[in-house]
Length: 85
Image (cartoon, rainbow, N blue to C red):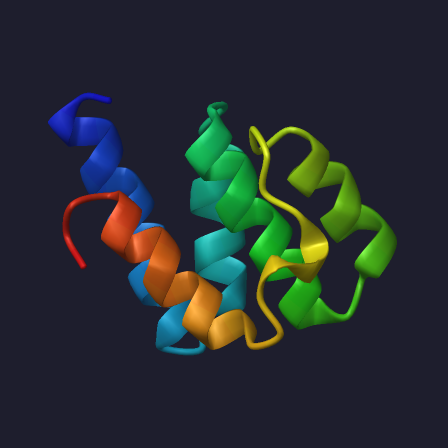
């Protein structure tokens, strides 16, 4: 993953953690890789859209809807995966 991509992921995750779901969602939609799909899945989990969330998890290379009960903790795990957390 390039440093630009890692920064884009981290920025989207930080927006989500700050409660700016719309910004985070818009940013992650511009990316198409397993980490972006994972973040996208978490965002839809937060939104309460389990079906859409599960779709994005299916594209997130082994991540599953039930891996984390707390979406905020999962966002922190995703942030750590960027190397920025």
